[in-house]
Image 1 (tube, helix red, strand yellow):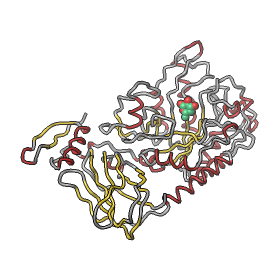
Image 2 (cartoon, protein in one colour):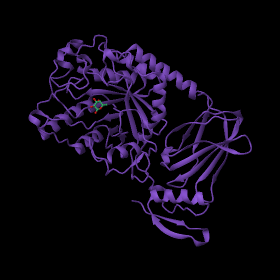
Image 3 (tube, protein in one colour):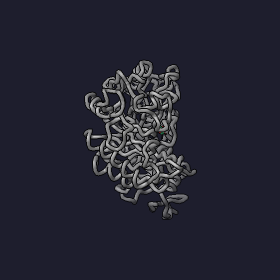
Image 4 (spheres, protein in one colour):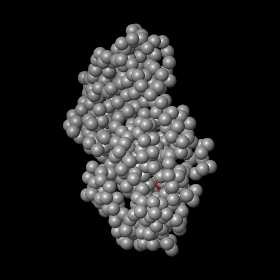
Length: 473
Ligand code: FUL
């Protein structure tokens, strides 16, 4: 844990020096501010603060990605196939990956991730590793390749392409025979990462069910991650344990609050790890963490991950999708929204319409930011900082979007937004972390002329945050 030297005391004259970690540092800052004393210092080099790689910044700035669960389950109406499916059932007669990509793009999504293989082991590309694949299906006369069509459609629509390769494989006979299956899995990964051009994100879950005769498969994660690094060095690797981005800890669409992009890598060290410390670590990250590993929020637009006709009336409403946006992107995470293609191989019209409405709602809410002029950035004598803006006309902002420059790390641990008509300051919202984006709904009140953000707790020298204000609700 990084030790910091901090000056603190009942008053400046009786200041004493004490060593502490960043967590206590934050608390001291807050207590000191409340009491009106102390001299927080930042003797640590700012270079100590974990920062994102260029790929992590790009990944986060995309904000919205679409997940596509598609495979034999689409035809068997199941969520987890048992691997005993006949490949002959896979026949998505009207499959059109361009329709997926156009739908995603029209809704403002910037990337898509496809289930190249789910737990049933059925491969959506013609692989040399198994007969359980599209090559033995009637689709396109057995000459089809969903991964190819998916990647080409992403390229045509200017979207980044990602692939999910389930480690749990309920079909492959070698599963459970650890070294043999690890070879198969790495071969599959190699096929996917060498045949299709740049892959922006490789998605791993930790599912680790029983193999034949109860055999337990031990995955070789270092080898798996190393394969991705070697074959696609610019790809982002997702799993519970990163290494580049982490699962948010639930499938409800809700990132933690606070949500730090930094983690202690020792707490969740492999995908699928369980234990009481895991979920909080995934939800909140760690303000004292040494590694940059932001959270991805995966959630489905329908109750299931795969398409089921019985769920056609259960597609999330636009209000619900908007709430998900606030609890994911609006909490410094990325939203990976699953929209499963139908048996025809198309995104269902209801889902497509809902996505278009979701885009329209975001336009209404965030289309027109108020004109603001920053009038000051003031580090406060007792610590923290205050940033003040003037509105170019009196207005009643109802949503604030705060952002830190994450290329310089994540610093703010708590803040307060205040507004004034020219005299008294009134609290509009309070929050904890900011990071790439923080969305707050603001309390209503009289027209405002000025707004300010008070950084109350911080883990490193506060820097200006950016603020956008919106009037729609
Ligand atoms: C989990 C799987 O078990 C689910 O079926 C789904 O694919 C979800 C996104 O990941 O690990």
